[in-house]
Image (cartoon, rainbow, N blue to C red; front, side):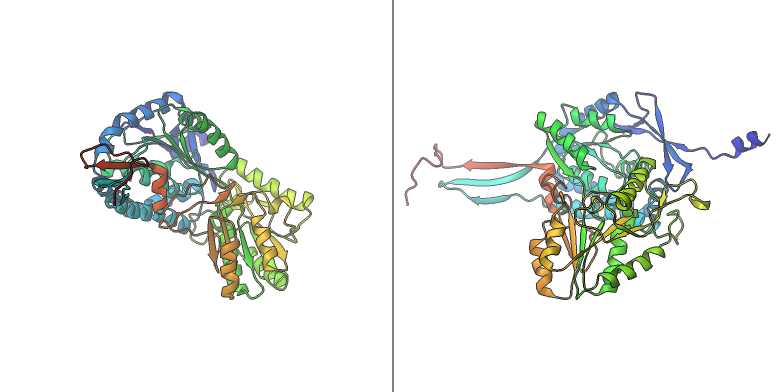
Length: 508
């Protein structure tokens, strides 16, 4: 009787589908996977189709069929639809925020910021529908006009990660659409609902059938998208190792590829810094989103004159951080995303303690009792006395772990920051304008902050990094348009005769 009662009262999880050609459909595989709450794995957010190559083929066919009509839709009209999309996201922000926290784990304020970033991206990029600037330039022959314009790429494959479930898909989707492309999104397998919410909003906004398609699933679906002959562009955010494989596959087919990958970001704290402010920035940068940001402040490079004071204040504050379910408004640090990632992070903590022989100043444990028993919770962790060459100081951990590294001179600090394989974000705390500008010049990262943490990018500036962080493209800002459009140079000769540029002499 007890078992029957339990089955009767158990909440049934919702079922979601792929979106292909304007229809919500099951996977051809007939298989499903559960999306679970990382704060409570007994809470199943929903069942999603486990897509295969056949699903990807259907989605690409739909995108290909819709491409001509969407490309020929005037860009200002495309932008009007996207502006409506922004309004729909704004109206549903609270609901989408709560659902994101439930499936991804980040605290409600951060999830709200994630949705807001999608709203901001949509409003900002919609404005480009009345710009999409090319330029005119003087021709070198008389009675000849020269200009250049943007044209769409074609069918774009978008592969997105778990840590920004709506912001990152929007960074890719909205610029692709305003430029006149059609898309197939492979949602992050840990956070498919937020992508579904974005795509449902696209449908409600009136984006035509086939222009936006989404397939849910795992790496085999992503691989099928990368390998499809009719996909002209792949935009990927994820690990450097996976990005390298994608780049190799795309190179074989001469596809355009945009990669946004890892980071090992550092905050420099100078001896003249406001230490309390630097500690606040370090807390936010290192433990916001449980450290699961490619821009996370996973290294704190601190001047020896203030090292002891900084570490004491930092550890004191870290120990007070509230860990828990992100749905609780008192929570400051939520769970990490899944079992595999949790084990990776705990493995790095063991490396820090044993192989690197760094000092474990606080944290370092998985939380398993009481409210933590069914979740992937790790204590916010600080290593001190870290050498610049230690593995915890060199390799991306992607969790609530930061390493404090001492230095003596600004030149040394900058060298430490630059001495990793990544180059995404950096920061410096100082009251000296000369030091600040020197650091801005010498730090070899795509993003640099002064008296702030390494996180907090805004949608109207380019986002991306150097070295192992990416392949040179930038998302956000107007620079993202260069990913999702190609340049066409146009020459109009109205002289009434053949003129040979670089050959014919022009009479003056």
